[in-house]
Amino acid sequence: MRDNQSFPVDLLKGILIHLLHALDCLHTEANEKNILLLLDEYSADESLDKFEQQEIDSPSPRKVDGERIIHTSRRLVPHIYNYGPPTLCDSGQARFGKYDPMIDIQPYQYRAPEAILDIPWDEKVDISNVGVLGLFEYGNIFNTTGGVENKENNIYHLARMVALLGLLPRTPYIEVKGTWCGNGLTRTLISYIPWQEIGRSY
Image (cartoon, rainbow, N blue to C red):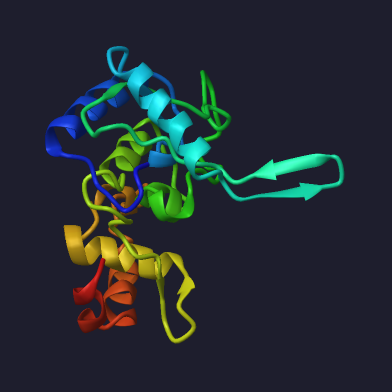
């Protein structure tokens, strides 16, 4: 990610096209930290030369720990349109073939409603991840904390989803007999957090 900057719409469209093509398995952790942007082949040398010169002119902070020298990382940020194709990485949580659709998946702030509510999920949870990537607007779309102690809680997360997107679909909350069983959940979400609080930031 670029420090405190979002991506222009044209670049974002290209990233999303590549990302959606990459989701031919259940990745379950499709977030901006797992998207590597390659250097454009025509400008890579220039970007790397500039990076090297910056390190020479202003060396990164470092410390000596015994026989090791530990350097802080310097970000390599080329010109905004000098990126190459994106690559979806970190497939450690990917699912292939048969999998348990009830196990806990996804980073907390990116979790799909199915993962939050502990109901069976499928490949659509990856699309949910893509939908909340902080690439266009810097930062998370849904605030997952609230209350006096500002702690993370599924109630706050779901309430902000409802506030921004509307009520959740009925389908996951219909019992085997066809009885709607989500009313209690909806009432809890609406009454638990004052709408004035949510209006400031989702």
